[in-house]
Length: 447
Image (cartoon, rainbow, N blue to C red; front, side, top):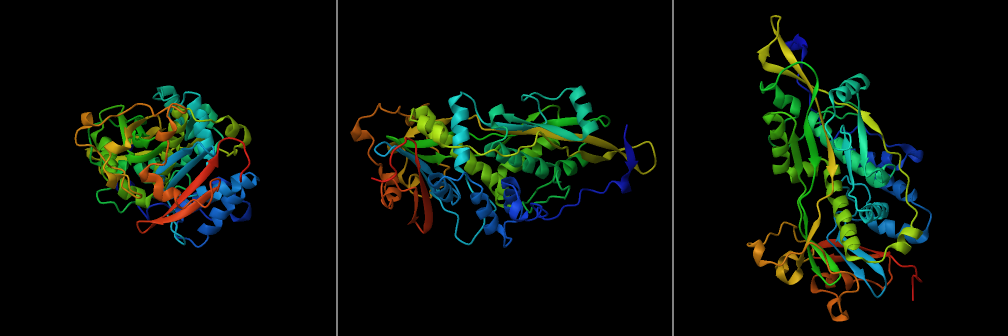
């Protein structure tokens, strides 16, 4: 049994939201180091330089370099189209405002390439900190963790280890763990949020006497797991019309105070995402994965792209420092005057991007929800009144009259400078949008 004097257990001190002690790595930093600098120093003057350093580390191929420079401008993803005539995948979405930084590092084509391979193999990308193959650690695992003070990191599937996609998912989960505990596990700096009602798990457990003191134990599994994505489709064109990212808590024991943390995060996810850039980065990355899922389910050609694109290798950690929640009980006195029992615990879980898309014929969606920049929270009043589909039209199954450009994508494509342009920007509804055009079949880039 662990005891300590009450006065010796100060509550975790909270400072500014995303910790800012990730310094600029200089001229020889890694992609991950530059990305963490951008995430946790979004208003620093060197953010633009860090973004440029990331792009300079891309494979030396003029075609992919230009495409990555357009990918880097995405703030979010809104829609996609397969251009059968030119054998290109076009993705579009809101553009990051010039001169402003949202704290989100550049989106990379590499993530699409990795996601496409994973999905073609019948798997789904994800990451898990603290679990083994998604299973709760045994008492032996817990004892090993307490000795090493490190939690294992599992990349799902294993092929995402050493990839940029795996690296981003790890950082997202690490950020969630830091927010949960109120401490960044790498630099050990406190974390806080200005979101009303935010309390880290340690503070919540101080008020809860529903579990025993004594041996350390995992409190539960925290998973970032989105709802199924609702995609309006017409021919070979899609647009996100319903989307929600959420945290799912799988309790290992009866810990209502811990479950309440997840409920609060889900209720205020958009507010937390404004303060913690990795959460917005996850939304954008997951939408890219869902575009790859639609592309794979539609049976569009992939072989030439996968042969010609050279994937990045990113160093991804196999373990990460454990954050241990030490919560003094406000209600259970210890054996000595003025002392209280300590509850030791840690949180495990990860990111699970397995939920599928469902497809809605575009004529069934109100026009205002198909317009550029529309918020993706549309919900039909009666789901049974709308034709939902578990899969999109297969490539080659539609006549030419049904693969013409739909009205909801026309404003984007009217701005395309020429059919095989690698990308372009367009102003719509007082916002800037960016489109990128990825060649999926080998052919001359210009006609």
